Length: 72
Image (cartoon, rainbow, N blue to C red; front, top):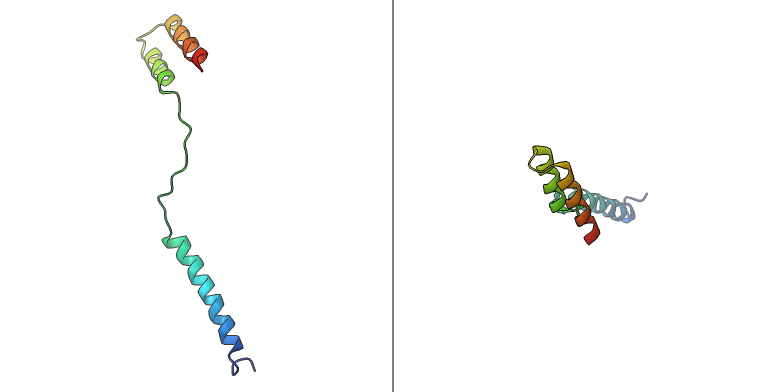
């Protein structure tokens, strides 16, 4: 029926080509895409670490934190 006039095989080959392209894109596509990450304020993180280690007291931490937040 459709096998002799080539219509079936043409459509069949197009679908196979679509599947091969889709699977190739999924499995062999770029995998090194990077997503933007939220940048934490490094200075504030440093003060948090120093406070946790006991290098600065609570008053110094709060003063530094308020100064940094007022700059923004």
